[in-house]
Length: 279
Image (cartoon, rainbow, N blue to C red):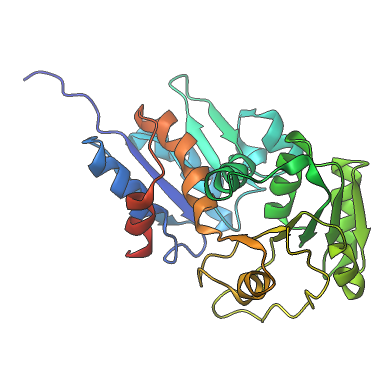
């Protein structure tokens, strides 16, 4: 009997993981491009992470996406960490190389920028300051990406200020930190406004920061995509702002991993979006 090639396997690891839209997304792309492969959700407890990552390549896995709570921990396990993953302090994409080494990358920032470029083509990152709510892992990826595309000034407000101060210490002089109580003040003159917190997500607390200071010419985006149009985005839209929902970031951050694992650069289009929304 001839040796058949191994069917490539990929997946997403988190704890919990049942809510993830990634299997629907990658499943759609695998089918679209006629690729023999599978993408599997895996609920992995923190204490099992290292053992699971060492085992997966032996089972035929070519890589995995990583989500909460493992994005920081995988950096300690990976053999090779890209500069941007090291800068952000988290990885969301692992590639299992043929030499047995684990390669860790972070595509969140690139996904964030690609989403804005696709859905707000007139957006000019250099036009003025960015104002960011939140200072967690997603915010770190967004800040690093904004610096890369030339945003001149970045203002950050977080409910716990030490996290914002730590982000400023790590990512530099373009950042200024505002008290959460003073967060409305950072909107003045901001041309890009971003919510990276979970406020406004289904099942989470509402986003209650007043947005009176929003400039109608600002681009406003929310990383939350459930609901697709958050209260934050609806209020920005009512003020005349251009708004971009968070689903595109999920789609675009997934594309580089899919390409590395399965050898095909996937297209992010309306059909891709609908496949995830209807999952």
